[in-house]
Amino acid sequence: MQESREAVGWSAVAPAYAATFAPLCGGTDDPLLAAAGISGGGPGMRVLDVGAGTGDLAAAALAAGAEVTAVDPDPDMLALARERAPQARLGRAGLPALPFGDAAYDAVLANFVVNHVRDPRAGVRELARVAATRGRVAVTIWPSGQNVQSRLWAAVVEEGGAVPPPALRLPADRDFPRTCAGLGALLAGASLRDVEAHPVRWTHRTDPKALWRGAAAGVGGIGTTVTAQPTEVRARMEAAYDRLVVPLVRDGVLVLDTEALLASGTKA
Image (tube, rainbow, N blue to C red):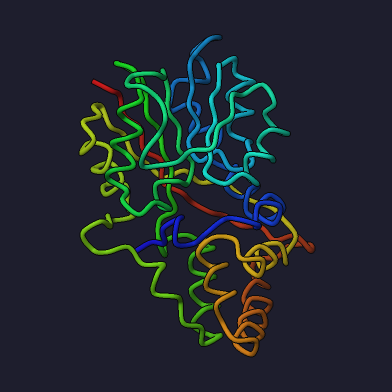
């Protein structure tokens, strides 16, 4: 099961996220634009970026000629998005209730958002609601336990003796399999057609300590777990991270061959 964004909390961590995890999440920007038909869609496409974070995806959509609206529930994230995508229309909002009319956008994007909401099915239905007829919806998630960083964090938690807060877990009746089939079924269940789901793989290069700095600052589910631990457990977790990350470091750079899942569908 996966953490909910509401449970995790993102207030006051936006700068740390921007410096650590945002560049990692940016590896799916180009595939998302392509899946939503934005890359070759031509000028004037109406695009909504839900959970815009630091604004990198919105900026990429603007560069492709789209007219972009970007929303995020966190004001600190919106401040960063305003710097990176100043031409986008920005607003404070999030799933599962978006302040837009039905069929308002030609393409709707949600990059690593569906795995952070308390009701993923309701969230995807809302993404589909605001998509225009024949418009595209494209989303990404992390596959739980199936990529390098997931396995790294699982080992850090186990070796450090950490206990994740119970609030991170979704109820079984709201969860869904973090697989291509599971994500594709989520979109199909929102009455999207021609659904396609596939892995996206890329290599992320960063400072070896960057991911730990993000976690220690409270970013994401792992950050919530780290900051919930007593001082001695956090120290053990950091020591475990420092040891476990060594095989991933080449010439002083953390080289992370990672994977996400991307699914897209068309509004009927």
